Length: 125
Image (tube, rainbow, N blue to C red):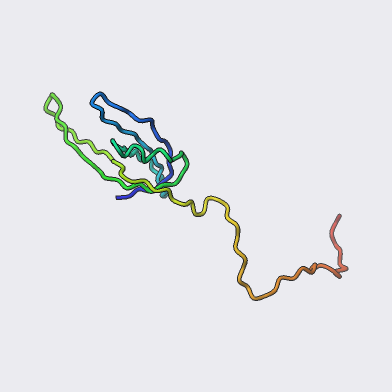
């Protein structure tokens, strides 16, 4: 699966006693009701976040994982996690100003003043 959005936050690397490492990134989706989505990057994938900055548009390859946990009281709970495995920067088409391309019209552009020779000057100032 893929998610696309704007990088909202990138956390520092977390290292646990077992040697396990993870790093998280929050992206804000680009839809009618934007959603902040937390994505975990594990072990060797944590370095994928190094070149990214907050505010950049990205497309992230993800896996959704689930697990079951039984509490000491015998209650069963279910947890989900979103794990990232690929990140691509996406070009921002539309939010940055771009230079307009020349029009393809066949009519030549005139440099003449269209009001030259207009003797009817009814401006109040």
